[in-house]
Image (tube, each protein chain N blue to C red):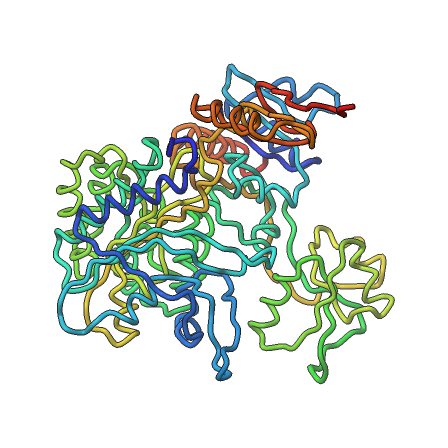
Length: 365
Length: 212
């Protein structure tokens, strides 16, 4: 029964909640409102979309929650204990293009505290398991921001260059990255390092092999080491085939650091899962600890792999003022007991149904 | 099957023949009829013609796996797509133009007429210049002549129209050419096919000296 009543996104939401619970994540429930200040201070964290605001009875500016992560961090305790929480919430945004208010269902989890390699591994596996819950045809793209920011620090040309280079890497835009490097007179060797971040993508082994000679020193070497040790763990996971390395996953460098990832499902036009390690955001909010998490955008699942039923209900029963109500009740209940779906109406309407039962008595003389 | 959105018009036709040479032929596209969608099962490709400014929407929303559109559209709409290749064709530039005698002394709000509202806003915001954007949908050049605006932000190809109307380019904002873009999800699941097309076109560009 639940199979037919629940929509895909609702089924997935339930499955994901029970999945996260299995790994000891605790449910996190919060208010729909939050002080607007929280979002104003971290504007770029909410990529590109507006926040719906209103004033409360004291004249304070509030927002309909556009994001869950910031609220969880704000309320995270400082007692050094690790927190593992999951949520299933609606968030509200103003869409960039059409300026419409949007209500979006999100499920996700956050792991906050002193993170071990295992915590990161667990988050990535849960991200894979979440995608597998939606469809077996999925890809999880993983990147390590330490490599990109390491290369950019070596080049050391400042924020304007960094932002442009980052954008081009995210777009896999090799031609403009090349001309940017030419304009800024970046050395051939360093240009090559940036370009590899665009051209090297795909299976874990092949990308790690290509990257190895470029990540020999400093920050990039450390990032490479972390990435490859994670990959060797993931190799044995049941989702190994679905994992790719791809450096076009570039989340804002001022919030994220370390591992970042995005999940794609064949048939859904944009990434349905996004996450990463955001120690920098924690630091900005005066919490000196690690954090990693992800969100699944369930609104994108609407209509995915669902065919519309050919019928609105199985049987339409017509009646009028002169129909014997007891006979009507009995007919309805018998049909429902047989597992049919039934609708009673006085006129035939435009519904689609398999069977018509006419109990109309007409005018009795 | 790989779905390709092409911009209606000369540019799209030129790009199609490049794709054909790269091994993605679809002969039915050359038949002179009013069909909008063309398919070739042998080469596993489906083409469709759409309004040039809509190509990025079809690709971003995934109904087209890849598409071809001008950099002007990408700058204006900033779609969430991969930009895989510069096709070095359809070359022109985004520019500020105005009457020859117009000089911006910066004393008052600059009136800017354009189709490219975001490009104009971003450009002048970077310069810290206060502007009043007037969104027009066509015949932009007439705006400064009639006094509707001080300058226009528009695509300039040869500059002939400007010259004939006593207008001139004041500043170039960025160069434009046609780009090959791909939907991000499609790229994950059709990597090989898309790479084959990109490599084929790249080779063609090398052979022809960037002339598709």
